[in-house]
Length: 537
Ligand code: PEP
Ligand code: MG
Image (tube, rainbow, N blue to C red; front, side, top):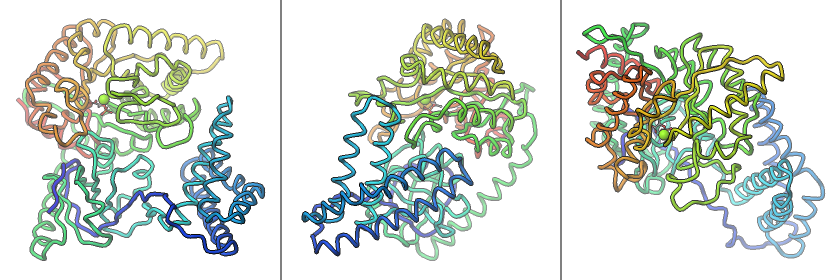
């Protein structure tokens, strides 16, 4: 049995599909002869082109023409006779095909990255992609096609990037297992959003489990049973059936108001990471969206989404919610959320560094693009803006100045928009401590217990060695929560919670008693949370 952290509830029974990020080191590849090396090169290029062509077609159908155009650009670049002939010249002078590819691509990467113009610099990352794909084809280390795994697959990887998770077909994936991450890591958030059981932080699992091996993943207890006996399989199939029945029984809470036994009305909202998740919230009975983690729109791509792309995403969500509240959190990058093209320097302490609202207030062009998109989308629904990682009053004031600038720009351009309330996440101890002062500037609070727990307890939220201290029921965290709710009540503003603790049944009665108005949880936890609140006094 392997031990990890149960990060998304449920039982997954199936065959392992191990996704390894193999190294692209080709130093041990031996040179055969020029003819053979050139054949290897041409075969690899041909394979790359046909795969990329198919991917581009798929993207233009399912994602967007802009993404597909980037891939088509890769094809044009690689089909340029100059690039290929340079690779062949390298082979003629005694290099293996891999070295030919790497030398020529690296030359282009250096050339493009040194240029001042942003568009040309993006070419450098295009060539990096081409280089890595060609090398993995040549070395035979191509990654698994996640979108095409067989039914009842248990996906195993060191970690899942947003682009990996976006390829998951949840009908075929029984569970997810990773080597890193905790309950609030992004793999966990995405697994819960899709309702797939997940066990994270299982040390060495990509090496200790082989492809095709039968496994049971227990997302409640955080354990993985390898090579299970017939009796174990039978026991877990039964447990899974019971769990599925229990979930079905929650359907009586669908469409019902969230009212405590003493008649106090509460709201249960859903957290989303992509525009498409909005439907998931509606289908699971959410009364609104309490957290749209917009950084996912910025991750796993070569450049920031344009204002129109963002406008499209935010409008889609606003329309899907049909007048119900949609709280859009502005870009929360840095810390555990890396975005390569934003060129944030490597920091000693990224969690205490240049991230979230701090980054946005210093990169106003990027920030205003997002704010304009949100303001324009607000005409289609009940949108609110939420600022992440606020630590002082001035940050809210500065953000409001930028919002006012966006409004006057939209006015003078004659673009339609709607002004929206601006609230904040309370996810740092400083914000909780001065929540009385922040409440004078913020239209609402949403308590982010994922970070609040980490910063209050001084523990890294993804570090398994200190995970015993990463606990929102610790008195220090509870006092910060209580203080925030009380100060919001005094000021008469709405206070919600969008950290994972909002779905924690140990905490719900206490949160209800303190007067928390809104609980925003992953879509798969909405009905259970409503049931837990309805059972409170
Ligand atoms: C939080 O910190 O509680 C939160 C909801 O934000 P995230 O998990 O995206 O950091
Ligand atoms: Mg946070």
